[in-house]
Length: 281
Image (cartoon, rainbow, N blue to C red; front, side, top):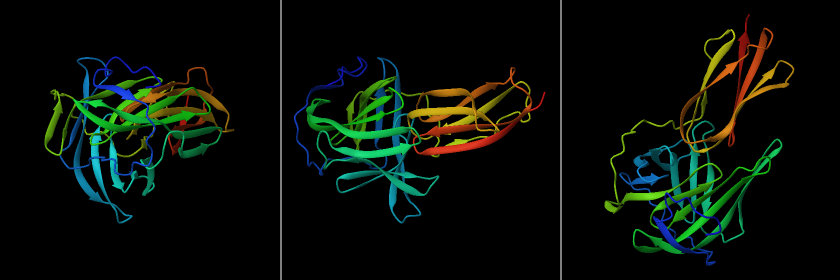
C-alpha cells in the first residue's frame, strides 16, 4: 500500500499489491441479513457492525440497515455502485463505484470554503483470512484541512479497513452469508447506534455561564461545531475533529461573554443544522 497501515490490522489484510485493474463491477459487497463484521484498532480492542434488516425507503428502493460504530446506515448495491440512504433528506449518495480505476474521481462536494474530493486511491489483490481477493481503496481529502481517510473495500467482505489522519483499523473477523472468517470475539458494546444526524437543543437554555450541546452522527467523519453571535461572527469552535458513528456532547462555556442570543452550528459531511441559545447573566 502507499501508506503504512496501522499495526492493529497490518497482519489482518496482508500482501496487498497496487496492481491496476479497473472496470471491476462484479465486486461482491455482501449485504445479507445476519452478516457481521468485527474491526480492531489495536490488539484486544474490537468493535462490530451487523446487517440487521432490509427496509423499503420512500424512493421505492430497498436498503440493508447495518448497525455499528464504524459501518452504520442504510446501504444498497446496484451493478457496480454502492449507495447510502440519507434519512434526513430522503435521498441517496454514491459511496463506491467499482467500475472506476486508480486516479478516477468518485465525487466532489463543495461546502463553502471546503471542497471534499473522493478518488480511487489504489486497487489490487491481497490476502485476507487466507484468501486472495481483489480490493479497491477510496481516498477522501478536505481542501480546508489536512483531514483525509482511505477506505478499503475487499471483494466478498465489503468494508475491510480504514487508514486516516486520526484513526486506523481493519477487519479481524467476519460472518459472511453464514460462513465465519478470522476470529469472532465477544463485543460488549451493543448500543443501538444512531441512523440519522441530529443536533439537540442545548440544555439548560437560557444558561449561565455554561450549557451542554448533544448531537448524534450516523457515520464516521469530521464533525465541526461552532458558535456565532447575532451578527454572524464566529465566537468559538467547540469541536473540529474526527468522530465515529455515535452520540456525543460538548460544553459551551460563555463565562467571558455578555448576555444575549447566540447560535451554534454543526457541519458533518453534507449535514448542517443551526440552533439558537440564550445566555442570561
